Length: 203
Image (cartoon, rainbow, N blue to C red):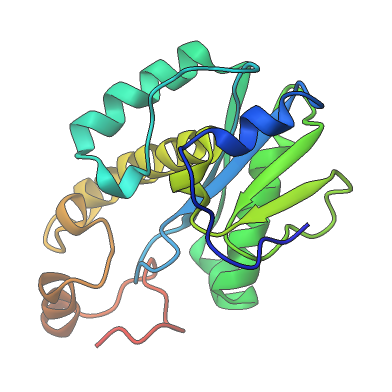
């Protein structure tokens, strides 16, 4: 079931409607889709019915706030998981298919099979065979999607910090592979790495 336009209302309103019919509702979201380097990550979260956890879009949070909420999500959730698609897969399939692949891997890794899935964006995940609903800006309207957004962002940021240790001159710990002025200057002066997405406009 696709959502043709942005929703209005409070975060969690969509789940509160669905929790009357489904116990295990998963939210799924990605992190790193627009980056120039590194994998794209996806998080998946199943919160208990009528959860009152206080979360919001990960992009609206400071890194330390995301880390705190990540721990709360792990405590509150019935289950959570993540998946990713590496740079080779991004280069091979393109970023859209790689993102959907990461999302499918996150869903497939949940220890509890969801009865219904809320997907951030407007494109359904192929080959899931589980009812799903796409929600534009779902990380602002769905508790499960916002939680999944935090999971994906925290885990990807942690991974990018490990790349910062491996390639200390590129500043991955700061820009996390995104297309900042500093990152592009580093590519220009130091060259392209294997972890860069060559399909993207790097300079």
